Image 1 (tube, protein in one colour):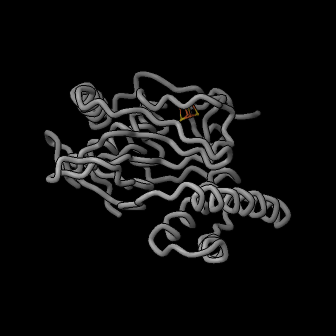
Image 2: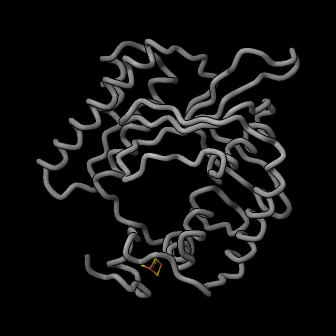
Length: 245
Ligand code: SF4
């Protein structure tokens, strides 16, 4: 894939905001951050749920999607891989029961979008978009949802301040032409949804942040560093200040 500095997505912006050297490593030098057990598990579970929404069925169908979507990379031993596989299967079983008890009108899953802004093209893929009751007959009210595994050491989810959800809301309103009424994270490990009404008045600030960040990315402004101790490439990065745990 050819690197296009004018093409933006949340992951690229997040990498630069976390650390310019991380962005350069992944997107300019085209090296790859190694998978960890948790990132690999997260990808497998996301893929399984995405395929399930596209082709719903019973619990067996979901677990069949999980088997097919399972990524082997990122685990040190077969035992560790099996341990995480079981952890993911348990999360999916509980999620499936919750989804049966709380049915939703899923309009899209794993839905890609793309829209132009200034000289940039902004792209993304949204885990799930639900149709909400209401709408004015011409537009559909929707909720934008991103799935999180929730194994991270945090219990508060800043929905209103999330750049990721703000970009996805822009994508839904500009590219898919739906009215975003709500944005939220669904935390798979705890089956909790953290959501908030979407305020279109925040779009100007989101776009300004995207523009200023993208200009620095294009100029390869490397004038700061992120938190090396928490960085996924701390053992690989030449600039790392935390090469050991
Ligand atoms: S190890 Fe430190 S300098 Fe290197 S990418 Fe990570 S945060 Fe940035």
